[in-house]
Length: 508
Image 1 (cartoon, helix red, strand yellow):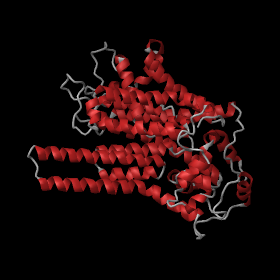
Image 2 (spheres, rainbow, N blue to C red; image 1 turned 135 degrees about the vertical axis):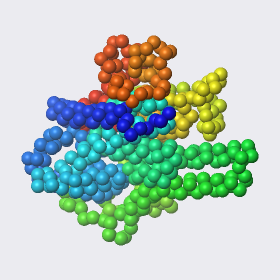
Image 3 (cartoon, one colour; image 1 turned 60 degrees about the horizontal axis):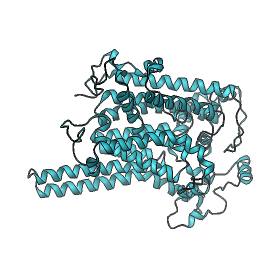
Image 4 (cartoon, rainbow, N blue to C red; image 1 turned 30 degrees about the vertical axis):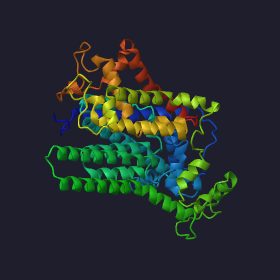
């Protein structure tokens, strides 16, 4: 079956739905920001050095709701660079894109908008593009991994309604990271290792959890070696060929891992030179208002006293900043006061845990073999190879999501899990799409349960590419409890996040 064609109507619908939801997000955030007064949050809020004009005031009125919380850090870095030590918690990939777009693409607007306003506009427009392309990349990835176009299509539509929606639109790096991560995974599934490593390397330059993507490269090369070993045991390959294959796979893993980790290492080196080195070439002179802010708030600047991490054997600024400024560490969030944040993260914890348990329970022996066999059966009695969510290629994505979940639960601010997993793992959307199709067989065509296979070949006609989500919402009362829970979770967090985040209320 040919999964990807030149004119894919499913893909066209993904683009249309993604752009529609992005536009709706921008309208709603502006509305909520106008109607609801901002909360006086204890957050990073640097002084504005330029006098705002009418254009700046209008832009702030329309898009100011997308510049809250961590978006202030990204915009500050894009405008001034890494002046304060705590800014080192945010990687440079996204701020660099925002600054380049503001200086080049929005250069004609410099007479109407100050630099900060152009950065805000740049960040919002880029995230519209990034999130739309990420939905398309997720669709292509789903077609390759799930071998099921309809499930891949539905998962991409659910991504457009992600519970982490506001962070995909605001001045955050989630949309760019999702685009790079999903594209890198897709290229790896196509066995384009160079393109995959470059994309995953760029993803690491955007967010630190891109380092975990090395596991995909390692697993793919392990599968390659296992296939070679099977050929050798079946006498269809010789020992020198097997040795050559092993050395080649080892080299691929080492070079790939170094490529993916390179942006992280370069950023730590830049941090060391900026805050620990006597060389002043990377240090910038602080404007007086920003220097006064540092004195008032106790922010460490590059020209001040050397921080303690400079004297460590491995001076990794990122780990130090997360520890000291954000109190990130093992089990630090496990306290009674954080119970509301655990409740906020409960849906994504439940979905990811449920997906992992269901996948493992379907074929424990396959999972014990670390997913290295070629095919995965539907069950012990079946001779049919599993597709969709239970396909053999899904194994590493289950491991990836479980690793992120476990790390996030034990070592991070747990409320961040929604956007952490929502921008990093396709499993959340694949499993939700799988549940919707299993629970509501009439999702695509009104057929009785048991007569519809969501992974059967689909003709690429307009009626087959119709978005099923609006019809589900219109027939809400007829939906099952599970369908209501899944769609309710996505839509409720989609809307609640906009209301709270845009008014500086706690939603991070």
